Image (tube, rainbow, N blue to C red; front, side, top):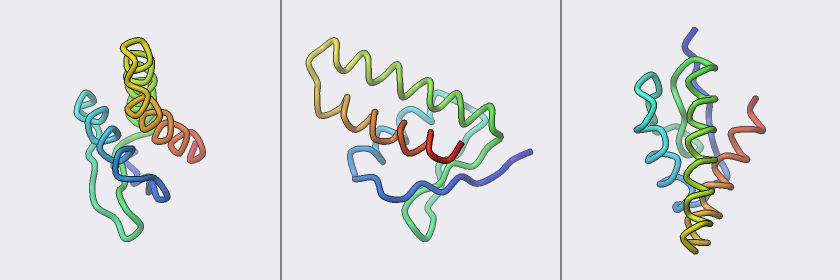
Length: 83
């Protein structure tokens, strides 16, 4: 079942990272919402985006890109709150 998961309270960097991570999951769309952005897709697809954000965070940390790692962690944490 497809649902819309609203994600508010994250900054521009985290929103950009969320969009990048969602591109790797075909069954999820990132859409604009009244409070910011939302993911549209089923629960398993949203979990896939969380895993993609985790992978992106670890990669950013490995390459010393702390700003990107923080943005990925912020977006992933907000998605975890919705679960």
